[in-house]
Length: 137
Image (cartoon, rainbow, N blue to C red; front, side, top):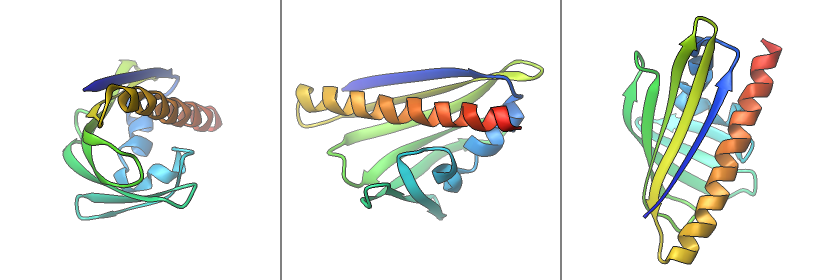
C-alpha cells in the first residue's frame, strides 16, 4: 500500500475554504486535472481533462468537521483499494489548513510509486488553484 499527504495553509476561514471543498460535485472548479464533475447520489462522476471518465464514491461526509472521504470505483488509473480524505481545519479566525491524504494499492510497488507521484501532483495543483481562488476573495 502507498500513502500520500499534501497540506496547504490558506488566508481564509475554514468555512470559506470548505464552501469550495465541501461541494463534492463541484471539484472541477478547483482541480485543474478535472474538466467536469457532478454527483449522482453518493457517486461522483468526473471527466479528466484528457477526456477519461472516472467514478468515486463519497463514503463519509461530515459538514460540521469539514471533512469527507471517497473511494475510487473505476477510471483510467490502475488503482486498487484507493481511499482519500480531505479536511479543512481552522488555524485561526481567518486562517485554515487543508489536509488531503490517500492510501491505495496497485499491481506492483513500481506502479504504486508512479501513481503516488501523479496523485500527489494532482492534489498539490488543486490546492495551489484553491490558493489562487482565495486571493481573489
